[in-house]
Length: 184
Picture 1 (spheres, rainbow, N blue to C red):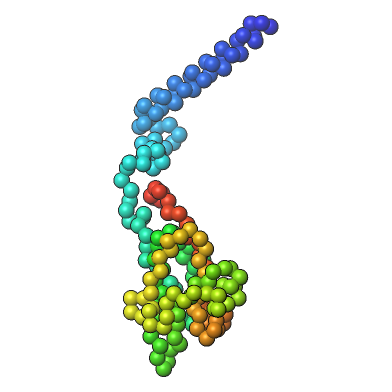
Picture 2: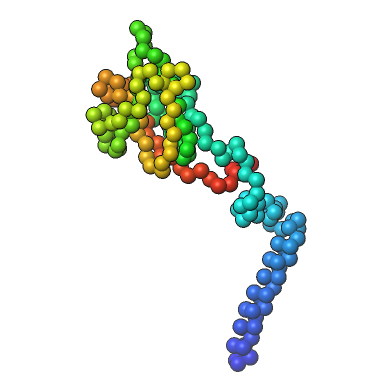
């Protein structure tokens, strides 16, 4: 019995030495086809070596036109648009484009609400105007998502009518931009 009890620690140590030796050989010969086609060099460049070249196009903040080709107008569901275009990232720029007020179009504006409750109720009295009727004309009004917090946007025209009835409102929470390129 004494021989068996003394043999267990030796056997455990032997398993550890063999396992670590195999791991060392595998890492030393990175082209060795273990675990299918897994490439350790690629793994290290993505997760371990942060001095590699980052794909700049994936890491740069984006300009996002609110509503896409629909721009900012009455009757378009911007909450659905925000869900379909998620995720938004810190330092991305939202661009609100809308027509100048004229005889055939409604004037629009951009408001930001301080809380979910004021946003949900389209309580324009509690909101802050970011852009008036003319600031979205042409190149549009640009707003940078520079804080990691929820943002609540809406059109504040007609004392919240565009927000309530016209569906001109949406909420987003920008995410932190990943530090590595996305998988191919």
